[in-house]
Length: 171
Image (cartoon, helix red, strand yellow):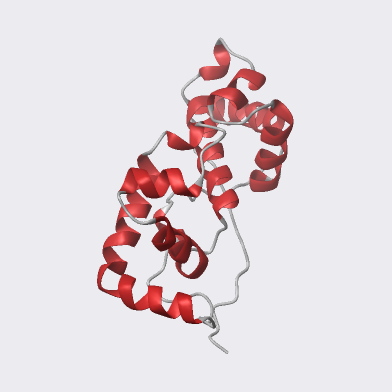
């Protein structure tokens, strides 16, 4: 197996609009947000890279906006126009990144994959398995086997890939 590592959650945010703003309400929000856009994006990148809030399986976009001290409408706008992931995709990415850190730190030496799924914010193992396999293209068990083999050969190697196609044209 060969994987690439990209656990930086700052790279999913951009100052450029990812799609055309067609409605009046979003254009008005754009004008209100524009002076703080780079601040908001930096705040969101830092939050996603450091938070454990995504371990709450019931976390909502409004909860995050509240934690960050910004209006929910601003966060919805930022997710819609300045993030290449949906909220659900971002949540799963953060949760799987946390799972990888747990695995790399020996969590599975005394715990199961099922308990790992619960500890990183999934309500059960099945959705964890699906997200894990979707993001890494291998099952959690295959990843663990790979890590055990690779650690013997090369030491721990953090692994996470996420590639999403998105249209950046402003047609």
